[in-house]
Length: 400
Image (cartoon, rainbow, N blue to C red; front, side):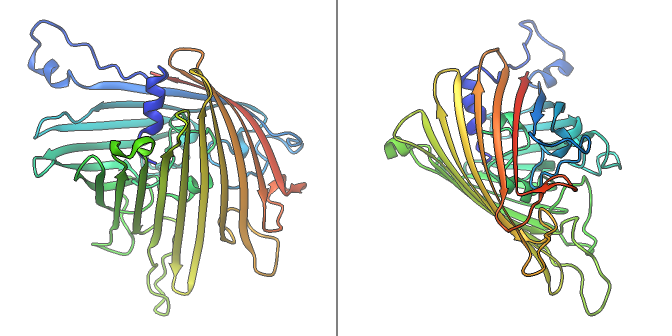
């Protein structure tokens, strides 16, 4: 979930470094004073991936439905995944605080992330965040963000090094990624916080509007509940739930009087992070549901659930395991070959070992096994389809 749990763990291990720009001791000019709290950070994400028994039809022909950053175009070779750069001024503690964030992506993983950034969704460049945040000193303080921002739901995030595993879950692929709009954040206490917002559309696209006409927006909201310190070993446990509804770019618009304009897509999410009695263990669970009503009497549906187990074996070694299951209407992940009651059902297990050997570098080895539970053979190649897929990868990320 968007709780920075993994970010804080990496920071404490020395993998991620948040170092503000040095401030000169002598008096600075007004221009320098205005930007003195701005920080520049980023990362370079690279990998090597191997899928045994494939590649006979050439690179990129292997079928891996439900995969994002470790998909068919990356097997059997070395990869630059993405380069991220962030320039931002975080909110301070003052009542009338203000800040901004600009984040851009470059590389294959940026393709299609934001198709309207420069008018071509096939380009390797995307704007991920570009927003201004201000605080109103009402109650405990209401933070308002206006511009382009990340979606508010989900257990995992786009940046692979902030997730327990390199490869994304099925649930991540069902969720929105980015919105253009406004968010309001308010914390009632250290245990209860809420966020609500309105955006142009549910799917990414800077300044994209819904074809349904004016005042047709995406509405979103979420609540976070965190266990207090008095709960003993359960302190810090978090339950997060959110939902949104709005127009999605893959929906169909029709002017046929018998079929009014498209119905909105609805995304719902609930997830939890639970510490264990053993300090080195933590447990996570996530559930995603997506209902996409393209036109009246025609609905596409999909849901996914995942279980996460994280074990800090030593100060330098962390083992993370994840189990995934997803089910959806035909076409969600692949086109079924079964004539009767076609649907998509997939299961995957992922095992990841992180080893902190170099400063500011996240080094990973990962193995993933996917299988079809619906009687289809969606993996392999077009001429040699298979029920299962096994992939291995190594991942190096430098965070600065």
